[in-house]
Image (tube, rainbow, N blue to C red):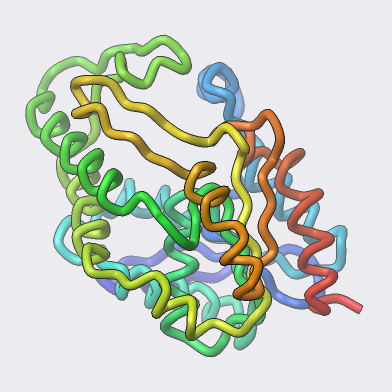
Length: 281
């Protein structure tokens, strides 16, 4: 294990598992246990997600470079500086710490968005895999609205005891995070208001993969201003154009945002695709 210095001079732990072509995954490999694990399972998440992904890639002949970037942002929020450019710089610093001059990247949800921003700012990527966030028709406006509302809730709920939401009931969930933790994501999506997707995609000539659950569209209720985050719809709508541009596109049958990120859904797509991209063999 080593450490990388982020754009605000904080440090993050970086690990690598396996030998072979490097694949950067900015996720935790800690296996969560006990009550926190049960809570994750109740929401459809996998307490061993990162560990299973990294192990699976290592067993397939890759070197999985991992760092808990999301956890780092929780512990060291960057409310004023977490722009798309800063995120890309952080990801490059993680790769540098692992000695990965050239590397593939896999990210899911907003970390897929982060990978696209990285790919447009470096020539060091060998391949880009985006899960749970479409390269075209991305829900930037909807996510900016959701993050702004989440931040307002965080400010309003300071000092109040946290509430417990029914698993799967996003509308009943109250935001009890520190306002700095929510503000940084507002900063991120504000930095993307003028992002030109097609101009960015025109600059990419590495192997590219985009996948999402076929049912991955999120409808928020009134307290979220009825925001609609279209992920599967956008990927489906732009599938033909993406394929024409050289992307591999997969829609995971009967899967939503949570279930399409599970290792059982991801690894059967990611490993053969990385291998076919001639990163192994």
